[in-house]
Length: 291
Ligand code: HBI
Ligand code: FE
Image (cartoon, rainbow, N blue to C red; front, side, top):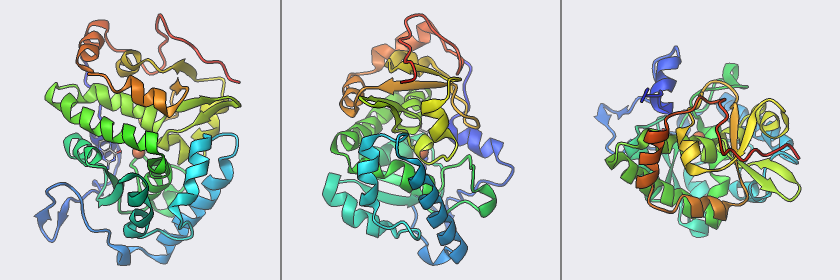
């Protein structure tokens, strides 16, 4: 099976700068890849970038982001500056038992899954430069806080994320991280949900992107397919362009239910059936039309 660059490897390989994720602090390699949030290091420009991104993205949400996200977003509280992570946790932990922890950037898959399995969401501790305002390949603090954290206030979604982390550790033991990272990519990062009033985005990569939010639920170009876990895990993805395929769920409960079973037989099925290109149709696809 051609190995597809994981988000981690492809990101560092594709960026022309040395990885920002310097995992040492005072010469010490961080054991679980977490680090203190160096709040004093943020410049006024960093806080202004966060505020501008938050305001622009919030204005784009109506009619494009799912109801659950729009309802949960105010739970973040602070939007006019980069929040201290303990300010987020003061609200998040009592709500669903989750906490955000600072990391220097993308981290290897096993530490990532381990954090999720322990209800700790890794949030990158730096923010993009103004030159990267419209697009950045690596997740920064805006992508993680704005894109991922609001839905961690949603009890069903929060349960799914913890189960996903636990499943990731099992996938690692089965050598199936690549397959599980595709499921993560096409749900947690780029998933769509069908509401009574039409398709809406719930994936963090969409919700934190000014361009892809519109594209994902309005463009006729990509194909949209009802989520089938095996089909999803067969499907390669691209990290530096809009998605050519979106997978659609009808509810977070459905996402939780379809990802609850033991994936071991599915991994075998994926190996047998083989991979699919990011834009390839496949027999059995249930295609979802634009509303
Ligand atoms: N690390 N900090 C961070 N954030 C992610 O979203 C992330 C990661 N490492 C690996 C990863 N995502 C993906 O490969 C997942 O599919 C595992
Ligand atoms: Fe992300």
